[in-house]
Length: 178
Image (cartoon, rainbow, N blue to C red; front, side):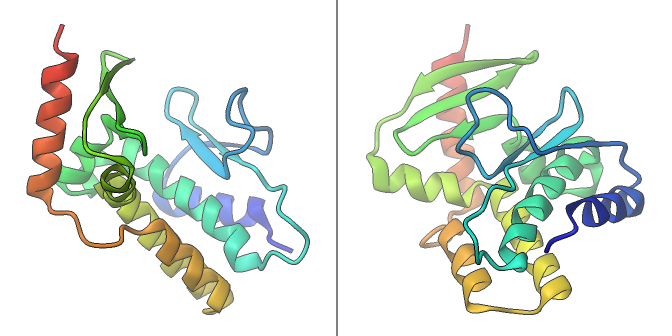
């Protein structure tokens, strides 16, 4: 069984982060595997996995959210594009958000679900968190087919360039300008 608290405590110690861990997902996020709330400094994990789910897969989600915590709270440790991407949300249906003064401004972009599925998965902060979680889970539990499949399913089908994200973010900026 995954010792979530041990992994969490070690990460927080190594990264010098003061975070909280909760296994009660916030309202509206019941189906999510996890999330990080930068306002409260809380990592939320939905640990209700089907029986037989490998420990490496369970740990992946905690490690993914811990990486997001570091991205938000220690931005100087990450690339400029990762830092910039944290202020944007791209969803599969083309609904996008930009974080402005603590408020998410919404807009819609055109382009189809396949395009936005790739853009969502390829966001710099997401690819970084997925890659980190995969590598860290492999170190803790060894490699497995399930862990590889999870990682591959969360990565874009083809790489997305920083230039593409700069264009998408500029379009979001334009549509959310007040």
